[in-house]
Length: 542
Image (cartoon, rainbow, N blue to C red; front, side, top):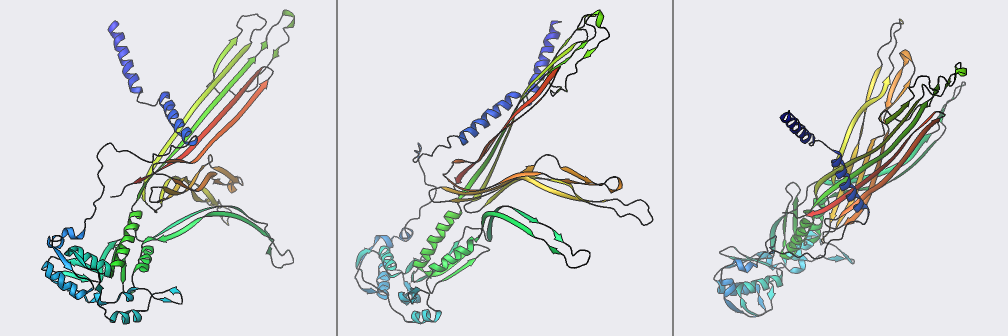
């Protein structure tokens, strides 16, 4: 007998452990405590500020390579052998001195003799303007040999760098020949997605009413509109930009009158042929644009919704039937009937009945019912998206429901037979949450966010409207939708969390039903706590 009890207890423990895999009240309470704490902190004191300085306990390594000087990649003769160079030397003699000092031939490109004045935009009437191609070509044909006035006792590589930087030239070494030129050709890449980006957000509310039409009457005549009224208020933003086209226009402003810029939108490749000074300016601009465009932003949108309900139901019902008070009053029967109870069948009941035969209160029944309910519903929805700086990201969570939008009446037969089948026209309605976020990150990782949201849901079941009866009965369904729209711009630091929307809604309702022989009541209290939090983090790019 004892082993049987032990086996039964073990079986019950195994069953309880399996049941523990399901959701229990403690799980609901824990989820409520965590969500309520997060929402309260977010709506209360706000997020803590970030530390200005962070100490790294381990060795710190740079995340990118740093280029070395060009002379460091050349043979040793360019950086070890010192040469005496006198001042006021024309470029052709400089080439001879450098060739004798290094042992490598020096090639002078014909464009080094173009005067620097041909590369400066001309002014016309006080306004800056580019010279015409004919003027630029005529100036370019007048050859002028550059002269370097600075004497130097230095290395050959150091001297060449000083000469070219002073005269606006460029020099390179391909292993066998030193080349000096004024125009250089370089290629760059635009880190942007080709095509236009459109941003649009509109919120409107208004009324459009017409008073109807008036006919010409029995005598004929024309009919006209008796009047209409329209009042609409709208707000929002609308913008379109093409990043590749904008960068191309910026490069056109930086080039010299004799320079050329070609941009391939398909490959995002930029080919520039211009002076070294202009090409360096364009390269710095593209590096700056690419650094801004490739900043990645991780966006985490967390929606907390807590529904708490408290209900109380109570009722007292006494059905008192005096079957016999005394022998002289047998012919009277007094009955009290309690009103309909508002307490549900889930409430506990306590009953009292008089069962003693022949007692004065024989047949008396008294019932007391009571119920207290307390419910918690926690919804915690988190979505994370990753986007580049200046590019919008969309988040959508929706559902589509179908309904009967309209009916077309059937056409009866001329012979008086049965009518046809009415036509049905379906409709659909889409509800859900739609969020659009446009981030903009500056140099200090401060993030400016434009946030648009459109939230909607069905307000209960579809409403059925009917007209006619019998064969002429027509029914349609109408959806009842409630929602909200939000459009705001915020600024936050890297990793900071802000509350985009926070609301607390309290709802109270109660009803009672009282009578001579009983009373009952139903009281409910509801509280909805909804918070939308957004966290933006700058993610380092490759």
